[in-house]
Each structure stands twice: as C-alpha cells, then as structure tokens.
Amino acid sequence: MQRERASKSDKDLAPSQEELDALLRDMPVFGLRGVRQTLKQRSKLFQRAWLLLIFLSTAYLIAWFSGFLQPYMAVGVTGQAADYKIHQVRFLMAFVLTAVGVIAVNFDWQLERVFTVIAWVHAYFVFSGIIRQWHTLPPDDSLIVIGFYSLNMLVLLGLMLILIFEERRFNRDKPS
Amino acid sequence: MLYVVAQLFCFSYAAVLIGFYTLVAATGQVTPSSNSSLTLLQDFTAIRIWIVIGGLAVYSWLWASKPPLATPLAVLSALAWVMFIEDYMVLDSILFVAEHPLGQAAVIMRPLFIVALTYQCFKQFEFEAT
Image 1 (cartoon, helix red, strand yellow):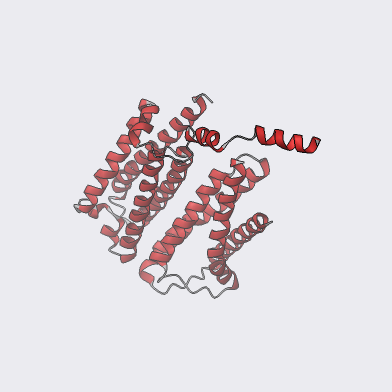
Image 2: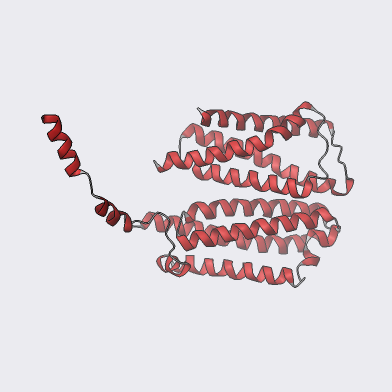
C-alpha cells in the first residue's frame, strides 16, 4: 500500500511532457542565432577583431586569385611542385577552419575552444612557413620577405588571440 | 578501459616517433624517392618533432595535475589531422621507404594514433560536460 502511494507520489512529481518542452524551449543547446546577434552581445574589441579578421581573409582571397601573392610564396622562389601543393592543401584547410569559425559564431557555440584550436593550427602554419622560407629564400632578400610574411601571419594570429581572450572575459563576466 | 588503451597507444606512438627521429638524425639514413622535395620533408620533420615532444610534455603535465584536458586534446588532434593530410596529399610520393622496424612501426601506427587521439578528445569532452 505504502509502495503504491510512494510510486503515485513519484509520478505526481515527474514533470509532464508540456512542462519539459517549455523548459527546453528557453535553453537551446545548438540553435542558430546569426553573426549579428552573437556580435551584439560581445565587446567592441571582439566585434572589431572579428570584422578585421574577415576583411583580411577576403583581401587574401582576392590577392591570391589575382596572382599578386604568387611571387612572394615559397613556390615563387623554389619552383618546386611540392611547395605549390602544400600551399593548396593549407589554403583548403584554412578555408575549412574559417568556415568552422563562422559557423561557431553563427551558432554562438564553444567560441573559445573553436578559436583556440584554429589559432594553434595557424601557429603551426606560421612557424613551419617561416622555417621553410628561411631555408629556401636567397640570403639577400630573405629578411624582408620573411618579415613581411611573418607580419601578415602574426597579425591574423593576434586577432585570433584577441577573440579568444575577449570570449574568455565574456564567459567569466556573464551572469550565471 | 578503452580510454586507457587509447592513451597508452598514443604514448607508445610518441615514443616510437621520437626514437625513430633520433635514429635518423644520428645516422642520416634518409633515402627519399625524389630529391627535389627533400628539403621540404626535412623542414617539416624538424618542426614537427618538437610539436610531438612539446605535446607529449604538455599532455603529461596536464594529465598529472588534473586541469581540464579537452581543449589541449582538441588542439593536438587538429594538429595531428592537419599533418596527416599534408603528408598524405603532398609528401606521399616523396616519403622515404622506411626499412627500419621503428620507421615501419611509425607508418603503421599513425592512422591508429590519430583515431586514438580523436577518441580521447571526444571522450574528454564527454567527461567534462558531465
């Protein structure tokens, strides 16, 4: 008798399907918000860093497809097919990572983690690229070209670090 | 249990890789099938071995001191995948034939290592979420 009463009491305490739906409606785990909505909640610095990152990525695409960058790449100096292929592969991977970053911002999902992973992969590209250029470029103009290359890549890395630290600050200050 | 096996496998792979690189650096036994891209292979190997050593050191330190591990594992998995894709798509035709048992072990273990590392990464996200 007591067991039946306890079981009935448990059923009374269990939330109904309507109540569960109402609760879950307000806490989407993975819902599309849009870039504008996500950026509106972030600091000015985050917004500017994001816009600059997108602008520089677009400028890079234009410069690459117009052939402006070709003489400054490792392949322009060595003429080796492997250098051209490695650039193509990295170009593809950078494009995928940019797409992942844009999707993460659109869904406002794990921004700090996503940009941390992207920044580390970018750092690998930067340092392996510098070592490669150091070995392949002629000593006369290697410093200028490496300096120009490093500056461009480190600016992008710096922007990503700003996004990571701003996101960390945003999560820390967010009321729970 | 599977997580521990994956972890042991990753440690073994890192040990094999470091051992093989030390052997190659000490004896200079690199026989590429194409000399034109040998420097590219050497440049990449020179930076990657430090990533392996650094990753191993950081992972061991974090694992022993118990802070959240999901993000470092995600970074290491992403780097392992990027290097694998680079090698497979670009350096595949110029990679030397690894005749030494350590070299053969490194080549055979690599896909399993990537799967084991990615598994650990997802499992760690699951642990930390709960």
